[in-house]
Image 1 (tube, one colour):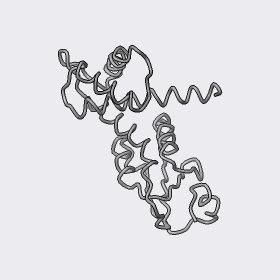
Image 2 (cartoon, helix red, strand yellow):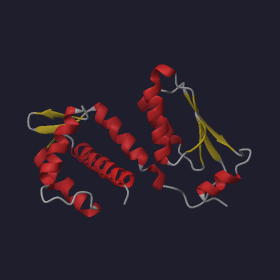
Image 3 (cartoon, one colour):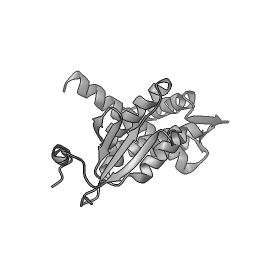
Image 4 (spheres, helix red, strand yellow):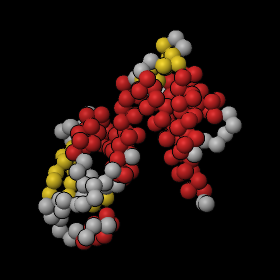
Length: 188
């Protein structure tokens, strides 16, 4: 395994751990780290994310790191999910969205066009990364295409990023020269 692949796998495990912790806290509401740890450790064991004998320490350090990042908040000795944490959790879930593909393609393309100003370049780049993680294909810098219904997901992303007027979601019947796109998505 090359350096890039190892780094990608490490980042994937870290994001999965983050998602599991945030999901656990969201599900339980206000919760002690001692309650979170066994649930997260059990989920990590099933997914094979962390193979350390000190898994509880890893979870505790991760909770502290998420609290310092503002995704979780300590209330006494208990954790609560913050609004920023809710947003981060939705983004992490969006990245898993590409796995929920319908069996049959409805022969319509979902085209996303955005015009996010230069002063919000970081947000624009973040949006591009999320679209790429979901499975969108870039036609041009700010034009992306996907073959399956994802309107709810795009609505959520627009709300989280506050880019409602800067992002346009279209459903189109045809795209000129779409044969390479069909091949890329494995469509007939």
